[in-house]
Image (cartoon, rainbow, N blue to C red; front, side):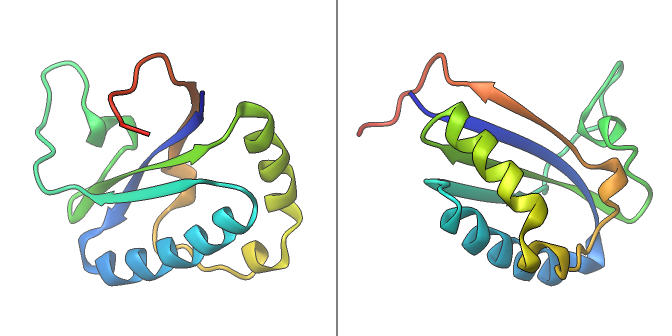
Length: 118
């Protein structure tokens, strides 16, 4: 079964097109390194919670929205190998991020249930 990287990213609302352009470049890089699918989503209905929420998770500020992305890998091993290669990739080193990467949160997840038809 596949392995998923999930990301929650605070992005200034005015940087939507720059985020999309950056996501497209990152997708090409990730696919070259073995990702099977990359999905990037722009927050349009991200409510404030009473205890916690997406915005608080990334310390989103006024004028920012939350983007949610995931990357599908064939396995955790493939993802770990790609992450190592990513850190040394010259394309990654020159890529501009249209958000504050210090507040981005991410994690790797084992798929335990999937309704996708393969």
